[in-house]
Image (tube, rainbow, N blue to C red; front, top):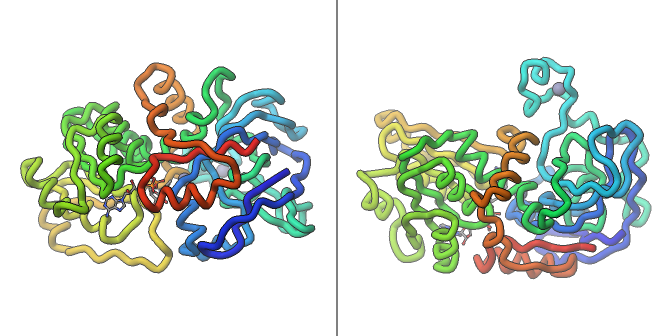
Length: 365
Ligand SMILES: NC(=O)c1ccc[n+]([C@@H]2O[C@H](COP(=O)([O-])OP(=O)(O)OC[C@H]3O[C@@H](n4cnc5c(N)ncnc54)[C@H](O)[C@@H]3O)[C@@H](O)[C@H]2O)c1
Ligand SMILES: [Zn+2]
Ligand SMILES: [Zn+2]
């Protein structure tokens, strides 16, 4: 199969012929029909996450068709349509699984092949993989554990469904699961890309009263209104913290940072009213530390929390998210800004850097 191989930070990908093995155990071979380009891939491609060393095959926001199943697979069969992303992989036996916290499974990585097993994917005879091991995105096929898959109806559009694999689930999960935004709340979302747009939609679904979108690109702020933003602030033109304070009674109850930048994380904290909660979603480079005025947090009893897809949202929620789309409550149609092939990955990253797209979706087959 073909795959876009990441060789070195910020250097172009090349399209290579790689070998993918047949599925073993609970693995499922998926023909990737749509693969969203998430900013987390860009963070790795930029060389900011040391655990991910090239050569690698990036991508983790996938929808596709089951091609072949391992002998122990019971939940999907060839021909089924599935979403695969940063989903769950759990053992069902450990202390956390038994206590209903499968998202914190103590053995969640044991389902994949070990270092002594035959590699799932090889390039020029050597093991190669992605963020999720053999579960990759910018390739024609992926080997993913069945526990990470969400089966969907065959009539649903693959390009929209792919986004549920990461960005949409992350943004909705931050609002509905981690922050638990109540009806009537005031919300600010900093960064209106794929994840931020989803957080904005989550706030709309939760019934928030004020939803303030902050971005530096006017077209993003326009699309944010389609997703449910009631106000838009261009941070390239005004101080976003002051603007948010003016639009509210001195600050929002809930803020979300969906960008991955220390400066905007500080803004997400400083725009909070007393007892407000900042939820940090953006992935920052390894080296970045956060500097926060301690007394600002203490005196106003403000809260700062992280949100990560893996820990917050499991497979059941992704089915709920698919249903939200079916019911017309979730706008995924306007989130797909452009399509491309594997060869267009570098162009998609550049479009992301310039803020030209909500999401590019690659169609590798
Ligand atoms: N926590 C998780 O589980 C998780 C999952 C997925 C993505 N992420 C992270 O979330 C972040 C957002 O991902 P994405 O795919 O939506 O990215 P994106 O590139 O689509 O969106 C980022 C947005 O921020 C805007 N922006 C740039 N500078 C700004 C500024 N100074 N102020 C306000 N807005 C600004 C851009 O115009 C763009 O619209 C990334 O850091 C990504 O790695 C985290
Ligand atoms: Zn477990
Ligand atoms: Zn992602």
